[in-house]
Image (tube, rainbow, N blue to C red):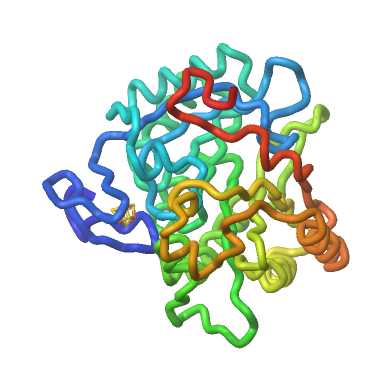
Length: 320
Ligand code: SF4
């Protein structure tokens, strides 16, 4: 990144030299923006397990290459609260601290802008004896360049598929809805490429005898009110392109957060459904569609999850 074409780690392709004064859309420099780490009991069962006190060893990075207007992690992804700039050595230390706390895996949240430094840290940690699966937990807007860095280092990909396109829409044309909701009008085009590359690298999700993930792809989709994420088209694309054996997490936890909490926000006026949580009926509609399409490895959430496990990065206990 320091030399050559500049940063090409995500679909934005900012081409900036981040070692200088220029920063790209994510605002990241060359040091790793770190927020916090914890044992997370609330990820999908193959990641967090079911054992009391254990969970996914989660590392939250600051800043993000996407700008989701309802991001529940907005305090660290967009407001950079409590951001510390750390080096690879510290990141390796944190991985081992999580391992010593009994983590089932190392779960890297919003890693994309730091892919270069993270790849070096993973390689060092593995050489030093870290045996836990590495989970790459991104918004799914990662470039080919970024994923090439991760090839052979990441065990489990946990990307979002945030939105689909209707059959009459063209992935090569800017999508106004993706632009307004996520700050990336070409999100779908890059997301499709990223998901295919992730599957090529690691295949479908594999679990051990305890039901814990050891390798593979698990795609997350957050259902939005009023089908704003075009969930029906997305599910069909996932089934057709990644296969009915795909592991999918259909998330029900949408709630108005970040800019959507502000009643005078233009996004809120354009998409009034974003001002409310999902209804039981509309969530069931999409879980039923997933089953009927043959997506038999679909994790579903209790709608009560919408009011639980909401992070507050201003507190010592983030998920209190
Ligand atoms: S990670 Fe993406 S948003 Fe950030 S500078 Fe690189 S290309 Fe731009």
